[in-house]
Image 1 (cartoon, one colour):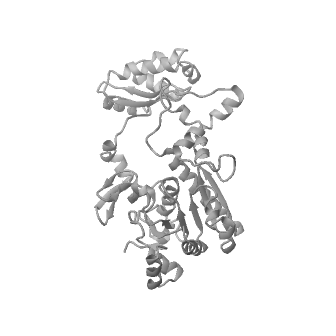
Image 2 (cartoon, helix red, strand yellow):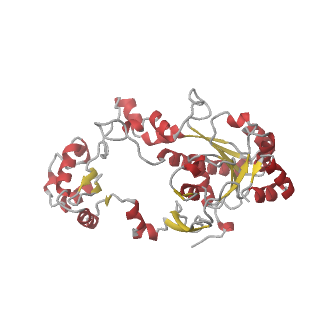
Image 3 (cartoon, one colour):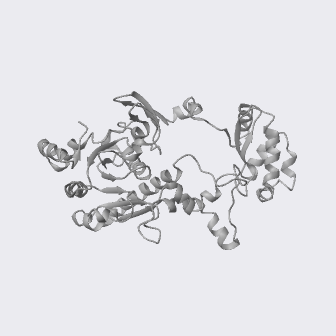
Length: 404
């Protein structure tokens, strides 16, 4: 079922994006996917995200997806006239999302107190490394550095090697969800009071939220979690196991019922009554030992054979998918997680589908990310009533940039 723009959950809401790189643009992409009108403000040289990832000729493939469903308006925020244009756009908006270093908006005269004076219902989402307060607030921060501060990096990797990283913007994407969630909570509160507010979202706190079980464990027991590689601390079997055909499978038998199913599927039902392995807590005390038993068994079968056997036994299992596997997988196709989208230069390209799935008002990909300044003239005319000749004059003096 496809929704029209008017039926979309966030239809009628206007969002101004003052963001770069990943966390901020990913937040507004979520809002745009569900119908919000997102106006992205960027300099003439474009958001740095346009230089990240792979390119097909001159086309930034990352930008086609993280900037999808948005309008690109290029305004020079270093000029007073540019700042005034943005103020006028924000005066008509419901939400503004920014991820500058703390204090930057204040120096530009775009602080919340100034903006909310003309628009008291405005919700401002502020995304930064360490927050708008605290001794670290002025530090520059990326997701990777904030993972280090949050203790996440200390736990990532194998125990006999230095801390590793996941080659994905995990914390940025995680923060984007918190930021979008905060924005919508503030909008719900505005419906009760008529007043907007500031949503202070940080990369380090979003990363730290994943450390939830370890906080009380340190408080009460002074346990400092360590790197455990592909294992799950205090839980076994839950790891990657090498297979006969040189692949890996992830088997997760996290509770007693699933472990009993696994033991039977492995042809080792005696493990169920063995007091060393019979309970979750007993297995947690013997993680290496339990994983070795499963590893020895898995090494005698191909990944496909293990999947077939364990899925039939209702044990959570999966081979380790590559992107090539994903593009040929029927589940990704059925769930519309690989969506073909028209593109003016490439003709068509596949991008990630929409999450989450709403039964009555699902999100929609209306268009791929626009080039820098593609919508400058249209937005300034529509939102601020400006004439084409006035926009051309601003462009001549470097106040705005249009790609047309």
